[in-house]
Length: 120
Length: 198
Ligand SMILES: Nc1nc2c(ncn2[C@@H]2O[C@H](COP(=O)(O)OP(=O)(O)OP(=O)(O)O)[C@@H](O)[C@H]2O)c(=O)[nH]1
Ligand SMILES: [Mg+2]
Image (cartoon, rainbow over all chains, first blue to last red; front, side, top):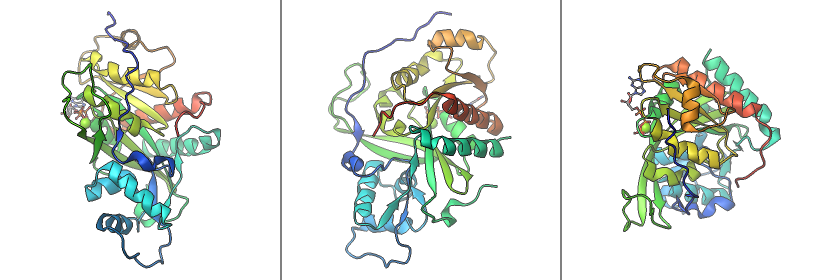
């Protein structure tokens, strides 16, 4: 069996989700969970309609991708609006486990135990 | 069984992600659907093209933005831990969006259609270049005859002996679940990687 795999040169080009400008301020990835920072707070005034919809969805813990899908707002735009809500202290950004730090190994082990429970 | 995330508003709830990559029609969405506790969700990303794909005749040079659909599923692993599974778009011309999708993943599965090996080369190339994301290869046999051994396939796709290759059936829940377990075990077995992403 002959190999056909071509190794191409560096193909990394500067594409990004539209609206990725907020990324350096908050680690908001597609899988990152968000929720309302203070559940007893009143609905903030003067939010844009999309931001208000997002804020209302955040009454329950949800991921960036789930909010994007539910409201049919593209991912990049959802990230920007969520980041602004977080800047205003309205939305809490939950920790995202990337496995890049040794301190996260315990969580990865929990993940594996969870998978073993579900798929035994 | 799994607890409901939505009833849980504690700030200690956290999430993680694995990526399901592979060629067009290799079985990525089928895998996600087999293991997910929710039906696979489709979401859209609008991509800004900063340059034109010169090596891809199928791309449209005049367009500034492209809309790409992708799907994902979810698993509640314990009361405070949710795992998302994100499928990358199968068409090679969308490979460029993988950076955004892959960023922060604890690992990736490259689904390979055993009948069309060449379709997975883009995905394998990508993860060979991004050494900070551990990946495994999941061979979807599509009920086909076992024409090649795993070792022959390893040679054909040019991956080292350390990359696990497992056979599975994307339509089967337990078989797909075992792929996820294998990936997590592999991720945990790897020596610490330096932080390469922001
Ligand atoms: N017989 C058989 N069919 C399969 C198997 N896995 C997937 N399929 C079918 O193959 C087709 C493609 O599978 P998908 O899961 O949609 O593939 P995909 O990788 O998500 O495809 P794209 O997102 O379009 O790249 C679907 O019609 C599946 O039902 C398998 O193991 N055996
Ligand atoms: Mg698909």
